[in-house]
Length: 441
Image (cartoon, rainbow, N blue to C red):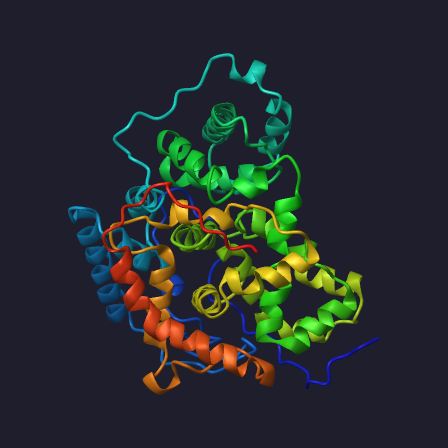
């Protein structure tokens, strides 16, 4: 049995964030928008280790001022003509996300380029009788009780479950190329609880034909291919952890439910779920796999303290902690995406499985969400601001490997110099499904 030589890790601090699921239109508490007490927001190390450094806590006055400022900036972007979608992406990615469900009702359609003035698709009366997926959808929805706010009256919850079934069946009926998978309802119910049935139908349909399309293929081949990005990301950041997991032969199946439900199935606090949805909707379709990677990297010492066998490591990783420092991990996932974009990792992922034409491979037909810039540019510009000028060509996240120095230097220059140039090039382009971007060789 292989064991880590690292010294024993002290017990983790108790999270200050409550885990009870919030109801519709919850107000975000200050603890969700302030820094995690265990890890400073701006700390970036190659291992993404847990830290017990405690920053100076933010006062309620500071928090309220920041919140009011962000709300004002969001409304300014919404009221711009045309809507400043690039600014909305920055707000969705930045600390605290979109803050309230009321704001999400206005911003999520903009991030998905859904026209809220158009009437929603209408369901057929005989849809349940005609759908081949009805029985499976019904079973899954009946098992989804914990996804609804605790204390909700049975009559209200049952009404929402009926709406959930109707949304799923309608999207599948309108898009026969899509195939239902177990876990899809976990994503749909999140939209239903946040924006209501009318708007949820339009948003879920757009999401299903873009971000989620690979999960809705007849087979799981493309889903498995996306999972194959997990280990190359970990290898870039922490080779020791990667090698340990490879020796344990744990694979990536522990992250399957994370990926295909956008963590909706495994996180108990609804506020954490919608915070991640803010982030994922503003980013590339592969961002959930980057977020999965930073969770594993954050738990490095726990993994290395396990027995080096598949059962032990799989059991540990499949039990996702509920007290994760979400804002820190979101920040780091965005940084990793900039440093190691999918195009850089595609060859390693394809080595495990023949590359297919996935939703991520055609993201250019979804990337131009505004007349200013694509989602990647928000992350690139943010990454530039996080690095000191003298450090912009250096690797700040990765454990040193001599054979990667040249590549990382070039990548750093690309981040530093490419953002401004690409922003100018994209400034005159409108978002429409016109282009194809081949990310996989």
